[in-house]
Length: 230
Image 1: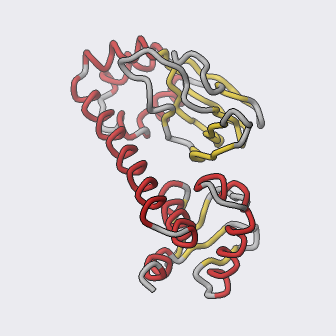
Image 2: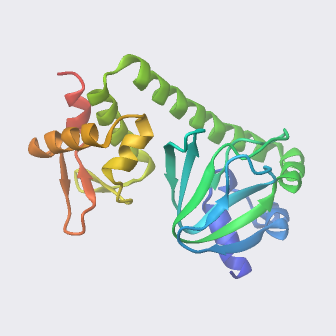
Image 3: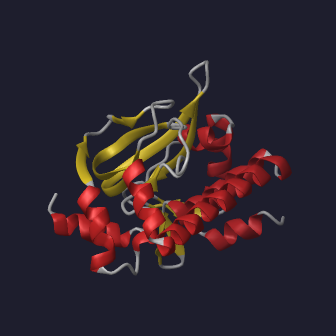
């Protein structure tokens, strides 16, 4: 990957936006690029956490497994996103698996060197805290959904959340840019594939969710939000 490509991709990452060329230069100097093919692991759960990654192209699946091997899908990350968000200013291990869903070019930065830059640029540190704050709010929302809502409502809330994290506005609807299987959706909230299938078919009959010719979901987010109150 050319240096100008690294600069352009890092400039699109939220915490690096508005940095001058001079400010972003130290980050570019410590950055490396890696290519990962489909189904490869970027890292595995409990590996030593010593790097942070930025996606230039491709998609990365983040998931955890328990002792029985059961999988919980955390998120699917797309170009411009950073991962993992845990681990700054402390020693530890990667909290989950990171598996490549689509061939990916990643920008890799050693955490210890990245932390030195964060300390040197307080405004960059503040931006990072804002991103981490957004992740905390997202996690709080997920916990609230599990505690306060039944399974049907949790699935509706999941579809609404995916509009933001893995969607793009197309007319009056949001198109999911990742084709999630019912099993993957179920793993996100700890329910069964059959339950997700019934719920998705129900909202399809109401035309709150449709699919384009390539099978991507088109979601009427407003209609789904209103569905929660009936």
